[in-house]
Length: 92
Image (cartoon, rainbow, N blue to C red; front, side, top):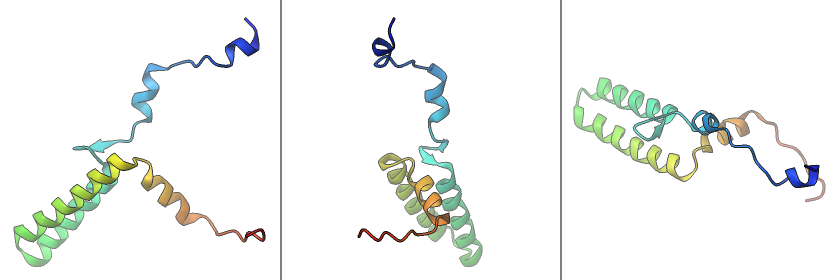
């Protein structure tokens, strides 16, 4: 076969789909889930009340679920942008 004929053919690796997906806990990216749990536990330790802790966890869980469904790579983009220096663009 010629190189031009092979250009449109993609090889599909069955395992890559499973390896490329983000790691989730209950449908939420694991870092967001951990943030919600740590926040809820710290609120419980401060207030000694279960209702505010569960409310905070439920709000952060819902926000994390929405963020994970909307854009699973949003955390990677934000983490990568934090470490990069801004560049001056003289064309703007």
